[in-house]
Length: 454
Image (cartoon, rainbow, N blue to C red):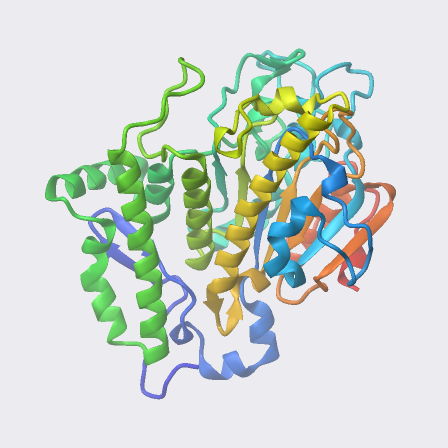
């Protein structure tokens, strides 16, 4: 609540410096005290929506809870979510029919990524005439993206080409992207943490940000050095609680910037592909890279820089190996396990590893408070993919987890099984409605999942 005598400030207030415009977390001073006390004001607080993609299917025996409802178990792959079990919904039974061949022959990996957020059938081509559909994140961005500095944020770990043949006659654009601005235009994801950081906190156009970065490097100053005077002026206007919140936020920004700088100073690990050029700000170790990107995403949500994001943990069909997990074989090769128990065990290790990173992100979101409520509670985070078992290449009974409750819009801490062949697109209709970006239909939807919110 804004203390008496202190000025209410705009929600769009930013800290400015040389080529820098740093968004701020929601402070008490940004909302009048009377409005904060009103239930309508609570409902008006922003909601966030993120889609996190993992490739190559899942070892479903270690993923699917045996029990439905509140009394559900966490199988081995989902065990890392134990600390946030009450804040997730495990969704079973949902399907992506348009990821199936439907007469187009092989290419399940490319189709699964292309369909994941569009619910549409990808045109089978590796030429310039790619076509699939507008993704759910971009539908939301077109309706509410104007309310934030960035309409949406697209992140990833693996770079990928938007041309060439990557899967049985399907363009590499399908395998490397899940966010589509138009049916023929994917939104390229950013994999370099430094470039994400500059995008979040660098003000002005791309050229202006580049010039500002050059000057900061010349004077060996961080982004925080440039905005500190503005930050001190703001701290004098707000109450003690807001001062503490601002200090915590600026500390997080500085810590992330330092991690990026450390990654830039370290020599890059030798790439598996000799033709692959690793961006300068990418950490050597995969876990460091993934967690840094998750931290940047949390900061983007905390500062309300954007409310809509996608993150590809790896490109679809990725054949990355995981030596730290004692998995020297390629992920995609292992996914074609043919029932081999040893290969399935290694796939389960990879699956669990990515759920561990998910747990890290969800706990990070839970640790950030917004008006006395964890940021996770004001969000919807959908994690999963559009292939069930990697060997079967099935696109039904997909591995999906929804975290956060979007401000208490639906109950969490449960496992829900939907009837066979219920489209994932029905879930997207419901999520768009919750985000106040409703549409009448989406992809291959045949209704919504209104039961989720009952």
